[in-house]
Length: 171
Image 1 (cartoon, rainbow, N blue to C red):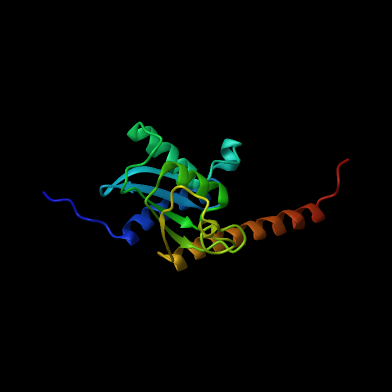
Image 2: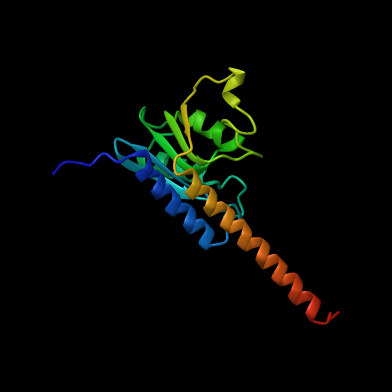
């Protein structure tokens, strides 16, 4: 039996599923999968709220799992991170330290994206490790997942305000 080489879209679909799990528990839907030698070595989804941990981004969760699984704080030379949203500055820093080879992301993040959108950290030239970046893998699907989540959140807030206006204050 031979192994089937998966495409970037196949791996991103797994990251998308991780993001869906985050949404199901009320977290911002971002998911990540770390792959080496055509195998998942780590995966994760956003849990800063549930974990009471501001560093519990999907990328960090996937890195923690991968490093635990391989018993090394440095990733294999071929490690690729698939993440549904462009990483922030914190996550880019962690990916540099872990020595990821490549990052493939879905949706851009105009406010906090640190690879191509809000800033390109690699333009500074300060880093001792640089990885390749590919954007736009399943971008529409990843963007829609985020948009739908925030739309639902806004509707929930409006409904809560409506209910508060209708019920008398009990002070």
